[in-house]
Image 1 (tube, rainbow, N blue to C red):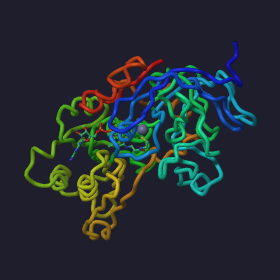
Image 2: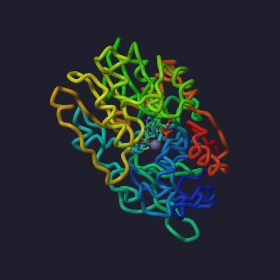
Image 3: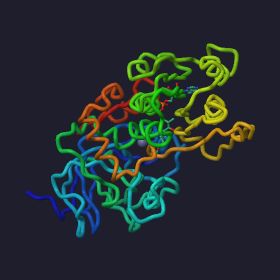
Length: 376
Ligand code: COD
Ligand code: ZN
């Protein structure tokens, strides 16, 4: 029996309050309005940003259905939707691509003004919600909300992918993988034969390592204070790893020593700390070095640094969603995965049934997992 046009009752993990576990509830999901798409979610990763909401570090309106790194199948579409149809395999896009705003129109831009990241309202673009639970409206998370069996997104925040792609793997292309990989191949545009340093070897940092490797870097130095991260980094492409805690001198000097006094061509900050941001900048070549900030800094933090670091010619840039225009790039990244241009398996350390979502968060908080994928 078709569910199109009807309210769907299903399971979702609801964030009612910060610093509390998510609660599996039965919720009602309204049908998609014009230019909206209702998706049956089949796999979703747990990302650090979801946990930032629960810990209170990322302020959003509650109650909310979190989750944003996902893949699923279109259940039904609202009036006027032409980009997808029921049955299509899709990835929701936390960074939409409307095609009309200044960022979408600029060849170098990718942070669509329709995003709900910078000042989260937790609503559909028309200002309303599609989820209710116990008579209360639940907010949407960064244009996606995937910790639910069904979600509704705007057509600008979803893209069709190859139906043959394994959803429980390619869901990572919805956030973590693309963020790190794109920082290297898209934002920094790492050149063949170059030397790179990646600060922070979590899931996003490992994806940056993979991007440096795919771009043909000949040396990729992993930097992390937790040496248990090194074997996996070496497995996905790092050529060596260093632990700043093993040295008395600043890590930037260590990296200069390792590169014959030159510094690295490209450095990536994938930790989210201001001290590692300046250390990564200082580690790259004084003239043509490029340093990319991928980690989200603590809110309201500031950096003071010696402007000579930039005066000599270094470039310091940031990267959101790996610099990719989401609608254009996500299907291509899925094809590249299918064409074995990169792997995702090393990033997926745990797969759990959706009901075990809070266990998945615990694995993330205790540093035991890289990515946990929840299946429905
Ligand atoms: N020096 C070196 N490494 C360090 C240091 C330090 N001082 N401190 C911690 N680390 C290491 C940790 O040991 C850990 O291995 C790594 O840094 C961080 O890894 P994780 O697992 O905490 O984090 P990731 O890889 O999941 O990445 C999270 C980011 C920190 C990059 C976070 O900012 C993020 O998720 N960024 C993506 C931004 C984004 O686009 N968000 C929007 C939607 S998600
Ligand atoms: Zn994410």
